Amino acid sequence: MTKPLSKAVLGLKPSGIRKFFDIVSEMKDAISLGVGEPDFDTPWHIRDEGIYALEKGKTFYTSNSGLKELREEICNYLKRKQNIAYDPMSEVVVTVGGSEAIDIGLRALINPGDEVIIPQPSYVSYEPCAILAGAKPVVINLKAENEFRLTAEELKSAITENTKVLILPFPNNPTGAIMERGDLEEIAKVVKENDIYVMSDEIYSELTYKGEHVSIASIDGMKERTILINGFSKAYAMTGWRLGYACAPKEIVKQMTKIHQFAIMCAPTTSQYAAVEALKNGDEDVKTMRDEYNRRRRFLMNAFKEMGLDCFEPYGAFYVFPCIKEFGMTSEEFATRFLEEERVAAIPGNAFGDSGEGYLRISYAYSLDNLKIAMERLKHFVEKLRN
Amino acid sequence: MREELLSIIEKNSRIDLKELAILLGVEEIDVANEIQKLEEEGIICGYHTLINWDKTSIDKVSALIEVKVTPQRGQGFDKIAERIYNYPEVRAVYLISGGYDLLVTLEEKTLREIANFVSDKLSTLDSVLSTATHFVLKKYKDHGTVFDKKHRDEREIITP
Image 1 (cartoon, helix red, strand yellow):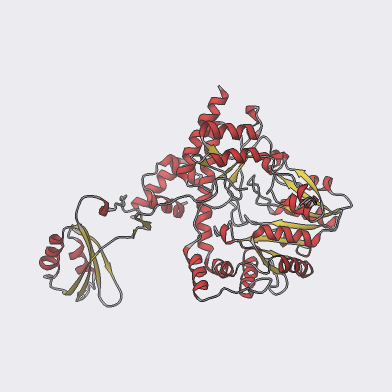
Image 2 (tube, rainbow over the protein chains, first blue to last red):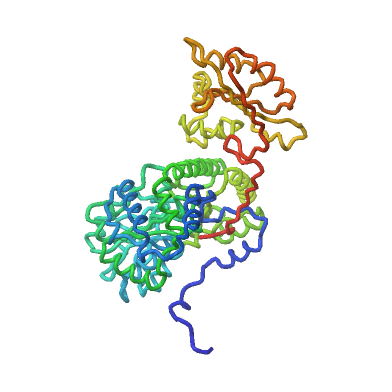
């Protein structure tokens, strides 16, 4: 074939750290601190419900927007946890992971030339999804001195007359930053003044270690302009089940469901039955895992303190984001040498945007024993570099 | 802190105070004081080691013994339970609802030791009406720990 492939897709930047990924995949004996998924198994009662659904022969399509029972449980959950009331019949769509919700949400909102504001460092798919939807991405570089929170001033300075959507990725991957109610109220004010939509990716909402997570959709006047995205991967250790959801005003959900219907049909049925069980009886599991993550987070913060490595204290997700600027190397050089000399894989911060340069994403979705060995090696490495 | 402290040391009683303090986000002295209090209040009753005896060369067995007894006036089951748990070879004694009264466990004894205990000691007690002894054939899981479980990390080495 000689006819060119899609320009939009060809134009997507390949990951800036492809080279690092290639080296990592060659190194089978390395300790990894590089994953973005829980190390826990999906709790057994949830898996059992999936097995039961299969045994009962529940192997057909569900309705496009997802099992009614699941949508109802999602709404109960959001009411219970965030005090936001969504209508299960018209304001929820169950998706294939939070990632599909990002994609179809942007596609439902964007007209050519619209601008999507993306605070970075953040998850890698917002920018490509915005571009594929026909939008112009506008990046805000978040700052360490603000603990990587988004400030109202930063938002204001990024808004133009073409601004359509703000993506709000908190608790944040890769920094672990959170936004508290006060921070969100400031942002909400600017959003309402400028009449823009918010896509709030709250996939890590259950993993916060300083008070309860607050959704921007719970702030006055915000629900009607927010697409709230969440899912089961992080909270219930269900990454492989590929299940997430979006809640939004019914006009938006209607359009999202159209794309979902044509591209996907419906989210996996087995996973949906398991997810009902997760929402009904999973609170204790979430707490157990959160407590364990929190202990690891404290362990890492203490280890950094002891080796004199600069790191703001993150209160969300399962990542810490230490600063490695003192060593005069790029993130990628640091990560590559750390991997080659100490056999530990951690992701260079710039994989998540230019403002991640000078940082390293360390995941604590690993057992304490694993983290202990990794921190000994990091200490060794850091001391070697300093001498 | 109390509940979380207990849940940590229930799984790992060898963890030291320094690490406990880090994991709990408190001072070492506070952890030490809390542990002392828990011991004094009889909440922490001992620090044991979970052993999979099947993997040793020591050839011993465990038994669960159902016991029906006549409760005694004024003392209910407590007196007879005490008579039984005072035998050092008894690992645990529970008062049980349902078809029998006491569940007595013996662990890591020879068959003869268990037989002697049941026939000479347990059955001959005045209040004991009957016993039924069950031998453990294989232990799959004990104290929340699955024996013989090999955990491999099957995740990709890095994911965004």
